[in-house]
Image 1 (cartoon, rainbow, N blue to C red):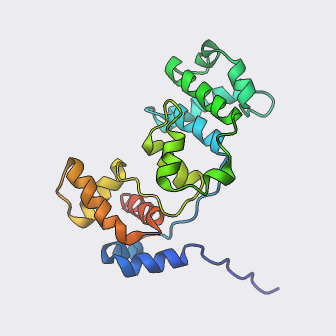
Image 2: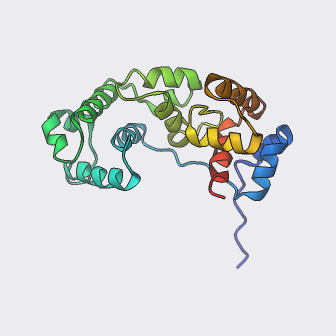
Length: 210
């Protein structure tokens, strides 16, 4: 039986563009592992998990999320109506703070109003998507960007406020600026990465592991 043909690499064009546009990034990609596309996720569920995970360790977030799922038998899926039927005290039994419980309820109300339609949101620009999602209490620019990059696998998002991206660019580009000057310089460098700033960012994150 002949060996199956390898699947086409969906990031081939992105890697070629980035290698031609930025020699620093070309060197990072040459020594790193190929980054992969992210699987599209349930945006509503991804938002809930993002709120649960805020300001706590990955291990603690996973444990609390399992307890949240246990509140929604049999499949553990917190349908918006079922989530709204729980009080903040109910959610606190799963380890959710009162503030986060309010945020989860806001997400459920947003979903009930059909404000999390995947097909529509995947067509929005980075700024329009961020403006839309940050109407929800507890959802800031960084959370919106992470959802766009990983839940929707949008190719051209640049999270300049992410600490990991800042550290990677300081290391590889020799940036010494701080504050707004640093963000401006990072954004200038990233302009040449368009329309693949998400893929470039994934390589920068990966470079921190080395």
